[in-house]
Image (tube, rainbow over the protein chains, first blue to last red):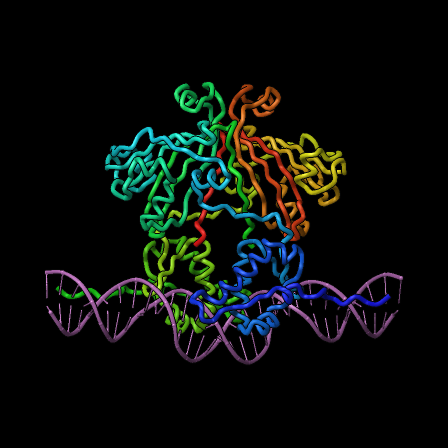
Length: 257
Length: 257
DNA sequence: GAGGTTCGATTGTCAGGACAAAGTCTTGAC
DNA sequence: GTCAAGACTTTGTCCTGACAATCGAACCTC
């Protein structure tokens, strides 16, 4: 019986990889996008080895650091795994997205559930102690309160209470009913950086039950979230409750190596 | 009035940065750790500019790529922000840890709450349809079931049900009561890679209430989690319930740029 | 045949240089 | 005084080259 060669045929050979040096898009990014779409498309099958970096660089006319940068970005996304002395492998799938700072609106829309919003309240009020601490503003100073009810498929889904520093955003009620809060922030030039979240559960009060169409005492999923931009300024503090019978948080997370 | 110079005094000058070239620890890692601890310690204050990369490299006797690699790792952690033409700034705090795949045991221990575990069940049984799908094994094949009650400060905290592929881990009951499941996995050479989680809420059944010291119908926080190693193999599927009155998930997350 | 050893393959780390792109600041024109 | 153009600073991208660390497999010894 003939010996098997150590490596199967390099799958990246038949991959039609190429880069455009006249494009303003960085070369490493062009490469990482092509690899990522090849993985999603299934051209690069899970478990298969990517050819070694030096050969890949030579074939594409790139330097090894550039190729490494492209591969590294996919490793960070959890799509590839590198092993010294072995090579770079496509992860055996199961990876979707590693938990973004997503708005409920975007999530529902992406899931094909037509989201709808009713603004219950949109006023400026003095900050309570809790809100002031979360936003890093003086207690009693002006903050914007936005209170919304979010529907999916015509059914109430969540009760959202957000506090924003006053004047940060033009909180037009009509726009709030047609899109998500984060989308409005990004559109107005705020670059979101990080968020601190707390997810818990508690029983519904009579009022909450009324709003959400659940009996009093029904279990609710709660989330509190403070969001910060890249200067460290708090841009939003939210206290939300979700109907546990209709909603759960789903997310993927990666182990940092 | 005299003009202010553009830059305040470079804070990294008084930082006692140094690298040990005889150490097996990579140079970029030594540097990033020193910077990180300086940030945590408060020596590098939020908002302050790090000296430019080239000067920093020269001062430390390193090359610029090495310094960049160190800085980049902290940017990925959310501790630093780079701006072209401006410099690298320490993020205005608020960042702790960007959500790890942590075990409840480690979390409780880190919080100073002495965790304790009682193993209720530790048997091999045939996989149900749900478990088989989550673990990627045939329905009815052997899987290990571990059922535990986790205490903190002597109070019941959570009811943990885990299913593992049979034979993956030596599930010694005594070790299970003295440490966490993930720690056991890592110790036996399994490299955790990613997990898919779902967090929700529901009312406690009578049995659950009994176990956890809550009345029937009390709100419980639920988590289901499938964990995968770097070959894509499912190594664990857990269905856990937490007392909502005593536990909430807290985590930080970063916006991927 | 079993076990340790050597060796090739592959990624990890590091250096040094060059130019491009973007933001800030100063200078100058109006 | 205001606005625009240009100089300067800083990070972003890319290249070439070199050696170290680690893994897997083939090889050799016992």
